[in-house]
Image (cartoon, rainbow, N blue to C red; front, top):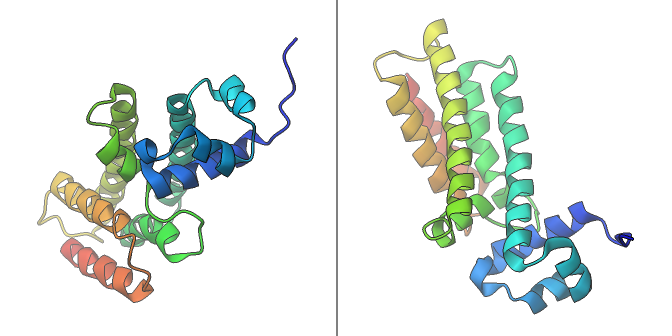
Length: 192
């Protein structure tokens, strides 16, 4: 008979996200996880089998939450430039608010794990494709409506905004909203 879990799995995954963001995958020990997650070592192994499985589950949760936000931004009725601005501001959200984690777990995973872990690499590629599709849809819609200039190729603009977004996501030491707003407003000028 299976034992009943005595903890909230979403809460545990949220704590794991914070730990992995703070220490990285390789820097987070099993003892760090036991201490930081507030569950016993046996519960950790019974539920997640090992650290890698927990990491993948935490990354999936992080990716799912971000993906939902991206889909909501792209599917709303706001003008294209505003959508692009909202997508860029999404990257700075955890950096500016009092979120327990600073930075982006996906960027951290891309740098630390993706080069030698095919599963993590696949997850990162899937997320990059989601972001690329979101920017491309917004740009193409803006070009069709005349809001965005057609002087630049939509795919080239998409790559520019993907790279700008990644740069914003790694700016973990900056806490001044004006710093990010300046970058976002400057980036939006390429759409004119």
